[in-house]
Image (cartoon, rainbow, N blue to C red; front, side):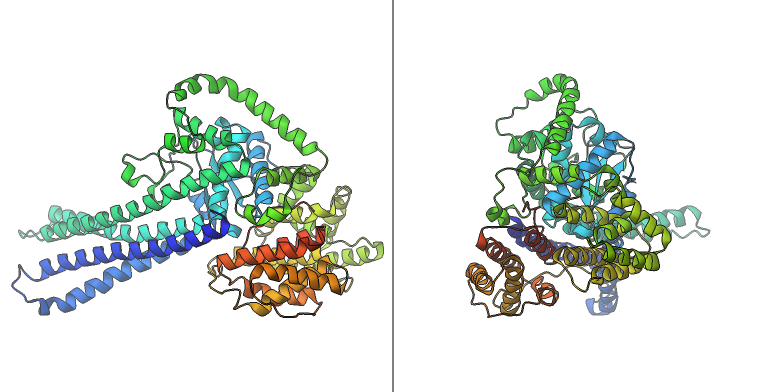
Length: 629
């Protein structure tokens, strides 16, 4: 199952979940109506017609309460995964971490982000949790957060940690996070009924205990409270059962994706084995039931309501032939081996990062199949890029105080005179201290390759979103001025500005969901023609080769594209990208294949072509894996 099939599956599951929740809510409403009828009909002495107004009121009231409560909880979590992580007691991983385990976590997350084409998420550690666990949360990839427990950092090797993080990134890539948030909201809506019933029950007990008359006025409240509470909890059990069924299937898929990503079953498999033999396992002090389906693993008293498959079952899916008896031997050997494994893993990664060149055997023509399913090649390439950027630049990009200046630095012109004009713009718009920061960063950026500028900018994006809103507006204005300083816009400048604008818009307006596309390629014939022409214009030198490249790409689409000779690629992209985001997943798959065919027509991939593909895919919400030109 590729990325686009995952998107279709996620949409179908969302629809099914809404229907199932609606049926569960309807059952709760009917049960409440029955209770109201039994209570107000006075043992059947009143006719049904006499109780209709009361039944109507109770139906509307229960439906409204469930809907409003569900919506409230869902909206409360749309602020981003950081909100969930903080609710769980997470501590953010800073720009200048001194703890080597937290630094290792940050490096692994950034490498996987760059490799998979997903925005770098916020990173948190649940410092008080000794169990091995992790989760990804957020309403969109731009608002995502990844959190791991302290036990995960201390008990897992680098390759095992990499397997766990790859598992969580699978949830980000495949749209599972949004489904998770919706499940939390829906379960909360039903739970409110149970909580109200409990409150009525305790109010009745209180009334009976402190009544001043001889009448037993509290009995009715106690009975009603117990009945409503029972109805609410039965509804909760139904929704938990639905949630568990959906979650278990997604966990198997995420484990499989982690193996495919790292090309190392021992990563995710080793983490699962460590959980199986660890004294604490996945247990978390802060874990609450509403977040259980978001975790890497959970323990449940009954498999019926378990949101995760049994650990042994997951191990055997990853490593067929593994036997339960092997766990005891692992328990004896793992503690001794882990130190040497960790050391070897770090040394191997250091050697890989210092290796010149990219990942061998990179098949660009096969890149569409890697969307949502990046492989070890992409992970290797991301590690090489990360290692080529100085640690000082890395730290500055992660810092809220310095990230702006990193972006400004990347936009400085090669021409000395033009560069000085841009610096004056920085000083005017952002102040003298900002210019000093830029000039300080210039001393660190001598060896920065052009192909590595966009990845460095992407590392800086999370820090930029933490700036005050008024500062973000000044940042956008300054970036635009720096780009326009020489009167033209190159591909890198366009890609950086466009991707940053999209990232900030989705971060600052999380309630505005990305479009669920339903359009077909036939609906977007004009837009696809303009897009293919723009990409061909950037990668080919003459009109003949441009036309041939467009024809090659059009052949993949299976539709007759229109003749588009307009060479203003920037105007064309600005016009068509928001519309093309409305394509359905299968149409997007064909479109990306057509773009690859267009680029590869001359059997060469330039850095500009790699960057334009990156920004196009970002704008249509397709996570393109990192590309080596």
